[in-house]
Image 1 (cartoon, helix red, strand yellow):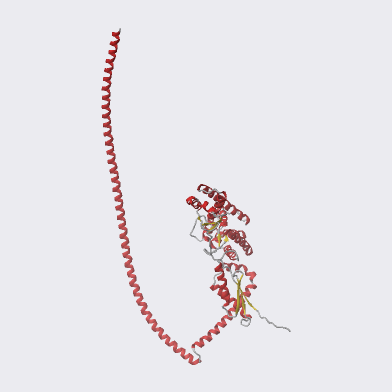
Image 2 (tube, rainbow, N blue to C red):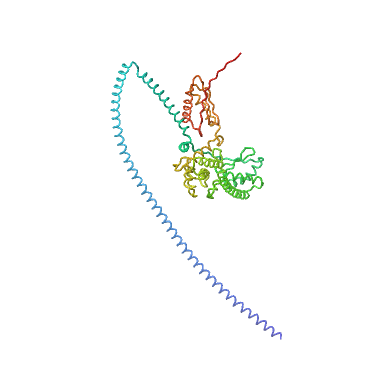
Length: 511
């Protein structure tokens, strides 16, 4: 039994050894096969990479050659253009030389003609002197004395005739005023209006204390940069106590920046994300307010059928000014004046009021334009289907185009009346004072004037004269001469009334 077990064990051991030898031979064979396959795959990949590198090199070489050819072509074209310009310059130079030669010939001819004319003039002067001596000998007067006497007589006669004619014309105009009123108004009002406009470009935002400035600026200036980027307004934070300056030519942007700053400072949360959110909301709210202002204005003036874009432009006028005069208030005033004047002249009051309200819409466009505001306003009115009468009145209220209807001069004169009345527009103090002084000094330059006072913001000039030196018949003449000199030498808004005062006082004392 034991022997059998031993034999079985020996058999199993011999079998295991044979199996191990077989497995080892199989592993060696697989190892050689894998190595050979790897070497073959490496050779194949190497060949593929070499082929790709060659193709890439050929492609780059082709592109390089193409670029060189294009550069050569451009250089040849440039050389051709340069040669053409050189030929053109040579031709022009030849033409200039020819013209110079012609000019030299003309100059020589003119010099010869001038010498001939000088000789003839000398002969004429000699003959004239001879005739003057003969006349002096026959009249017993020198030429200068005779000229002075004749000049005095002619001037005196001319002044007398002119004053008489002017007085007759004025009297006739007063008598026939009611009959000729329409014609006189239409023909004369066109002289009044002039185009001048200034804009405020700075707003001041007041704050409670200077600590707020640091919060508005933010860490490393990030808040103020975000504000400027969101609003398009330059924000100036300087040493001015309790104030921040907002600078921008667009009044709408300045108003958005001012309202946004007010909300941010009131809320207390100031950071870039919050700034963008507040500016967006403020802009939306202001747009709605602009439309509402335009609608309310049209309702107040009883103007219907206006295009929504024109209504929005009317609302934008609220934030625009001219010479310190609010543009919306000015336009409303012009509209009412136009309606009144058109009714007096027997014209269509509704059309006149519509043209008066829209006459300055060219000052509030959405996009900047190089056209004058009158022409730009006319184009906007045409774009939104306004009547030809209204469009012509808008375009012609500063004489940019020819007036084709009677509404146009009405709008022009009402615009001038609204802008020229005392207190309507801001005027630089120094210029205003200088204009008053110039008015008074101009009147004081006349003989017999003792005092001159410019009153009513320079729209009336009262002149006091001495009764001994100025007679009653000369008072009207003096007022006329002063008015003519003011028209010729001065620039002023509206008109200036000249009043000459002459009085005689007698005093006695009873004892």
